[in-house]
Every structure is written in C-alpha cells, then in structure tokens.
Image 1 (tube, helix red, strand yellow):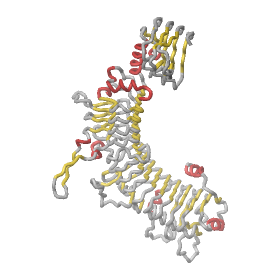
Image 2 (cartoon, rainbow, N blue to C red; image 1 turned 30 degrees about the horizontal axis):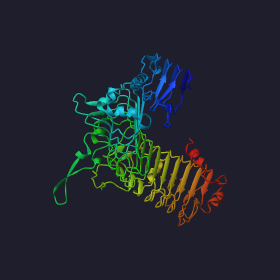
Image 3 (tube, rainbow, N blue to C red; image 1 turned 180 degrees about the vertical axis):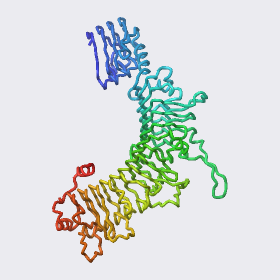
Image 4 (cartoon, rainbow, N blue to C red; image 1 turned 60 degrees about the horizontal axis):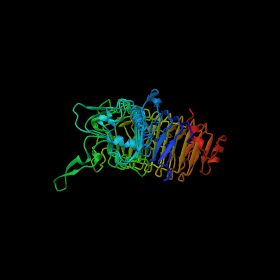
Length: 608
C-alpha cells in the first residue's frame, strides 16, 4: 500500500483501529509515501488509527478529515511524521480546520473539545478506558458538558462516584442518565464539601434515570442539599441489591437506635439502613410518572434487602411531590414493609414477590382516583391497603383490621378496570360487605389464580357493581366453594345478572360446589364462551329451572338456568359429565363444544 494516494473509511460500526499490529515482528516504522488525503467518517467505535507501538511516516499527507468519530482519542502511540500536512478538518465543528504538524496533539485536542460539545456521551472500559480515567481524575479540567443531553456509563469497574455537585451544576441540558454494570459505583452523585451558597442541586431537564446491575451502589445522591428534578418522569432501578435510598444525608454507620432491653437497660445499636425511606424530604420529583424497582433475576432482591419504606411522611405531605405518578412497579423485595400512599394520577400498579409486605400505606383511608390496572402477586403477608396501626420492627399487624378481607370500606377504586391477583393466601374474603360508593363499578377484567383461603369471591351486594365486567377467570383456588358468598335474603330465589361478561373461566377449583350455594338464578346475556374444567366437586353441571318443580335437589348444580340464561353462548369447553346432553335437551343446540385456543381470550375480552 506504499503507492496509495487517498484513503477513505466510512460508516463501519465496529472498526476500532485502522492499522492493527497483531504480530510481534511488526516494523517499528510504517511509511505511506504517497498518501495525500486521509478521510475517516462515521466510525462510532474508532479509538485510534493504530494502537500498536509503531511510528508512521506520511511523506505526502496534506489533508486529514475526521467526521463523527467521537471516541477517537488519539492518532497513534508514537508521533507521526507529517511534513506536508496543511491541517486537520473536523467537520462536526462547522468544518473547522486546525493547522498543526503534530497530528497526535491535534486529534487529542479535538477529541477533548468534541466530548465537551457532545450531546451523547458513553463511558465504557471496553471501548474508551482512557476517557474513564480522565473522568475519574477531574473531567472539569478537560471538558465542557453544557451541551450534554445523554450520559451512559456501562462496564465500568473503577469509578466509585460519577458526579460531584460542582459537576452536576455544569449539566443544565442533561435529559437521560444510564448507569449499568458499574461494579464499584457507590453513589451517582456526592456532596464534595460544605458550600453554603448552594442550597439546591437542580437537573432542570433530566427526564429519565436508569440504574442497572450496580452491585455496590447504595444511593443516587449522598449529601445534605435539596435535590430537584422538575422534569424527571421515569426512574428504573434493576438488580442493585445494596441500594436503600434515592437520596440520604447520613451514612449507614451513623444511624443509631436506642431501645430498652428485657432487663430495662437502655441499649444502643447501629440500625439497619431501612430506617431511612427510599425518598426523603430532600427530594423534589414533581413530574415523576413511572417508578420501577425490580431485580434483574428472580433470585435477586429489590432494590435492597434493607428497604422498608419508599416515601418519607413529610415528603408525602407536600402537594408538589409525586402527584403525577402513573405507573408503580415493585418486584422482589425480601424485606418489604410499609410502602406508599395514594397518588392522584397513578394509573398502573404492580406489587410482585414482596413476601413481607403487610399493607400499602399508613392512614385512615385511601383513594386511587385514576388507577385502572392493579396486579398483586405473591405477597403472602399483605393484609390490607390502609391502616393507622404503627407497625413495629417485629412486623405486628393492626388488631382492628379484618386481616382476612383485602378490599374494605377504607379503600376506594372508582376507575379500576383490570384486577389480577395471583398466589395470595392470606384472606378468607376478597371484598367487604360494605364498600365505598362507585368502587369497582368500572371493573372489566378480573383474574384470580391460586388464591388459597378464599371460600367465596363476591359478597352478593357487590354483583350489581359488576355490570361492566367483560372477563372473569378464576383458577386453582383450592378452598373456593362458591363464587358468590351466601347471605340471608327475604327472596326465595335471588337473581344475579352479569350483563356484559363475554368470557367466563372456572378451572381447577377442587372444592367448588356451586355458583351460589342456595336456590338462585343467573343471567349472562353477553356470554359467548364458557370454560369449566377440573372442578371435581361439582356434582351437577347445570339444571333447568322449573317453576312447577316441588323438589329442590340436595346437591346444588353449578348453574341454574333457563332459555334466557345463556342467550349468546357460542362455545363451551368442559370436562363435566352430561353438560352437552343437558344443554341440547334445553334447546341450546347452537352451542359448540371446543378446545381452548390462544386467540379466544383476546377476541372475547377486547370485543366492545
């Protein structure tokens, strides 16, 4: 290639260097005698022209153009000879041309300026170790970050802290911050010393924070200043087992608890970090819409095995905090205790694998005015949403709360549309006989799975609230005996109408005997598919209502029905003996006995 006059390399995503020295016997000097023009463009992984210990001689090189090679920190390890070089053109900076016969110094200087003016900066030991070293020492001496919008750190094992307060003040445009696989990172930001003039640290345009697989991180911010992120809409924390606070003002070693022991002596000890809430009163996040705290793997705890509370009581008392929260997802905390209070814009909430969660919040009552999706899974100690009993360190439960009833008159869900509860074992009843007005009146989707302990699902007084219910699926609830709770009524045969249910599935309910345990009628004017499988205790699948019958059977059927009970029924899947014959004898010839296919669920549920 000694006769080469022009070299141009463009749009190669993976190129890290142009000349690779893979052998030990490489020449100490490589000469490009006739090369006049060198162009490097849109090479996002390029680090240098050559990383080996080689000197280059460019006898005829007159022009070098570098465009969008944001991680090219140097040209080569040794100084290159460029006697004819007129300049280096750096096209991202308005076709700026630098005149310098030292190609290495020019590239390095341009890199420093380019990083400072960059809008998207990614730090990674695998791709730009030198840049991480510069950042670790003092990036403010080399870079100006006033234009930086996206900052990403991954695969880093040297940084223990990313930002100081003074560095944070130089990031007015920062919008997105991601930190992943930073093994030694303890805090994202720290207060480097007392500064009476700075009372508030502000990230005015920051909208998203993601922390993932940072095994040693304990907090986002450690310091005493107010942390203000007025535009922050999303926080995601995944697989950060040591993280117990978003911001905190004292170290874990300083938290002291004094208590009286059994002998009446005052004993002091260092408290666990979960004494502090995840969000304290030094944090302002008025636009936060999505909060997700979850492990990367099921075996990992979230976000720390010390976390007990998310919010400080004083924080929740300020109306400007957290009022825009729409999605809350908590998953996998081994030591979950008191969680949070209501938020007026919260639309989706999922509580998953929180084995020591006892309640949702402290107080006398709670309303979720905008919540439309609620999912609770594997929270075996969860007893109620709200109570004013102070839970101590031993996890006592309020003796005044009916721990066997999840939804009572102290909690309201006026807009809830989708409710899924899985693997719960604490309650004997789901709903209290008396609920707040309009609670659950908009419910469309109900799924209960493996909720052992329940003997029934609905109190009879609640059926009238379920007139918008489209889908009802109940499976593997081993203690369930009836769907509707028995009650004393003056009516000889009460009627229950589910006017919009299109899909009904009752599966693997080993103790289920009947829909309602005494003589009754039900109507399903919109039901199109019915699934009844694995309900081995049901002796009679269905029996026709006969007003002239004098004998009421000792065994209640699962359904009492007439021609008006299932007017729209199209498909039936069941392993019940005699179901087909019973329906055919009562003029339900249009019903098709089918297997359950995957698309049915969506077609029936999402039909308007």
